[in-house]
Image (tube, rainbow, N blue to C red; front, side, top):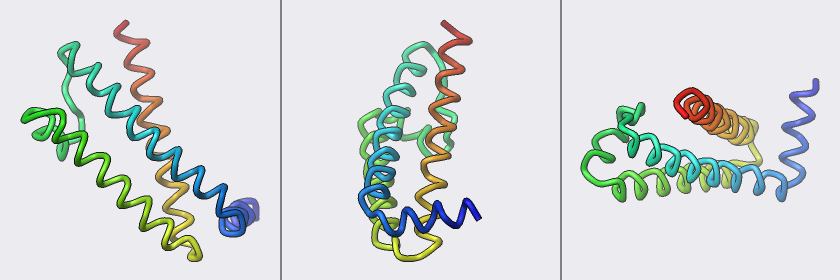
Length: 111
């Protein structure tokens, strides 16, 4: 019931959804810069898709990450009238939030 109300709230409040999608993009940038920090300390990129891009040049990884997440958030925005679009927005926030927590744990562990 609460989940349904949350989805309806997102559908009926496009500004709230836009803020969530903006948050996803900000978290994506935070992930990129925190990953650069890890790489600078001798760590490795955990994402097998981005690893070769970081190895070639971090700018390639940045371009790919930014474009992929911007495109995905644009698709979610276009699908905002559908339940699956709203669920995708929530999933994206949860995934990038978890990635940020993972980075914070690593910073605490290795600082």
